[in-house]
Amino acid sequence: MSYAQDVLAKLKEKNASEPEFIQAATEVLTSLEPVFEKHPEFEKASLLERIVEPERQIMFRVPWVDDNGKVQVNRGFRVQFNSAIGPYKGGLRLHPSVNLGIIKFLGFEQIFKNSLTTLPIGGGKGGSDFDPKGKSDREVMAFCQSFMTELFRHIGADTDVPAGDIGTGAREIGFMFGQYKRLKDVYEGVLTGKGLTWGGSLARTQATGYGLVYYAQEMLKDLGTDFNGKTVAISGAGNVAIYACEKAQQLGAKVITVSDSNGYVVDEEGIDLAAVKEIKEVKRGRIKDYLNYRPNAKYVEGAGLWQAVKVDVALPCATQNELLIDDAKALVANGTMIVAEGANMPTTLEATQYLQENGVYFAPGKASNAGGVATSALEMSQNSQRLSWTFEEVDEKLHNIMITIYKNSVAAAKEYNCEIGGKTNLVAGANIAGFMKVADAMMAQGVC
Ligand SMILES: NC(=O)C1=CN([C@@H]2O[C@H](COP(=O)(O)OP(=O)(O)OC[C@H]3O[C@@H](n4cnc5c(N)ncnc54)[C@H](OP(=O)(O)O)[C@@H]3O)[C@@H](O)[C@H]2O)C=CC1
Ligand SMILES: N=C(CCC(=O)O)C(=O)O
Image 1 (cartoon, rainbow, N blue to C red):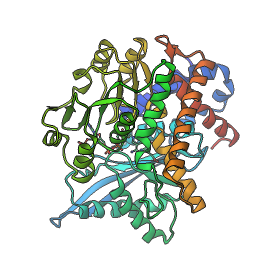
Image 2: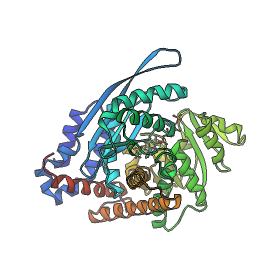
Image 3: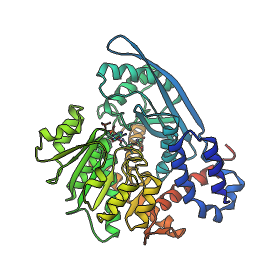
Image 4: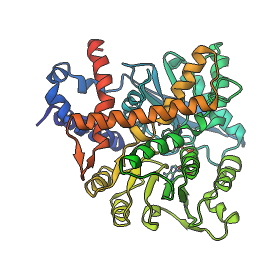
């Protein structure tokens, strides 16, 4: 049994109730096998045993009062996974499905994603099982203030910088920031995704979606083509999905699907993004309301998006494990050229392998969705300098970072001979490239 396999076996035993964390760790550790053959010093330093154990895991009670005067209680989390290359950095997910295993999977992915950005940020993640859907602004504020009343003692601009993720948008970041400032009596860049009048960065809202398309553009370039005239399927209708759609449309693609947790829309004439933005960003409505704007479109309740349409490009931008083996088989049968993940771990391990082995060029979210956290790090840079860059300046830096992530992933894959289905194995390349910088820092910093 190899070093990585031995550590993985122990990890599965020790974290048996955390399937998503085991899934994320299985993908990374399997990719790293050839690295440990070349670097036996890593095993001697028990590097893997240390990197798979979070530096700190914080769980706390979050009591708040709803609009009926009833006291509600939620559970809060922050996993400070790895600070070898910088302060912990990662989003806050507010969704009823949140538990420690989900936050550990997200935090583990964040270590290598943040490393790939080439910026000085470590890996962390947090959130709560609070569901903001259907709550009043006052209820969301009450929750966010209570959440931050516990979290503030563990974070800071040079310690741990949370941001958005599922269920955490500009509204939630605002309420959390206001509470932090009151408690700490400090005005600092402790959160990213802030409003533009109080320290936010231009292009941060667009960054994850734009960055995903910039990365996918590099993939298409290596296939001798581009987005112009391509048919694209996108899942989700939130921050990542909306701005992936916007950039793909700007590059000449026809996006024909979006979805939410109730169902999906197919609009063969091309998604009306202004309608999606109004439904989701303004009215906080359901995607089925799209038919009120585009009566010729189709709405289908439930899952099934990936088997419903024939597309050149698939961009899963909703949630983990949304693209399963039968979806992968449908994409292959329909001749899909590339799958680039906008969400974190949306494709199961089995589906990923099937897509790669059958010639679909596949990008893991830790590489292709890194534009969000990269731009968060650019927001931190602007805060440190007490400056604000223009949209064009930030967008150009973002584009260059995504090109660098792609090139570094390809280079690492080539160095370790990682090919699959006749194409570069970007999963292995991203995991290796992301790991090496963290490994180098951990080896230099001693047993810690
Ligand atoms: N925001 C960011 O900066 C980044 C986010 N990501 C990842 O991208 C993905 C989307 O995040 P983001 O756009 O920020 O989140 P949002 O909350 O803005 O949007 C999430 C979208 O996914 C849908 N969704 C959520 N859970 C499920 C589910 N269980 N089944 C089906 N659909 C679901 C939501 O539908 P509904 O409204 O019905 O809940 C919504 O349309 C997540 O995996 C996140 O971790 C990755 C990098 C950066
Ligand atoms: N949710 C995010 C963004 C994190 C951040 O901007 O710190 C992610 O990279 O998954």
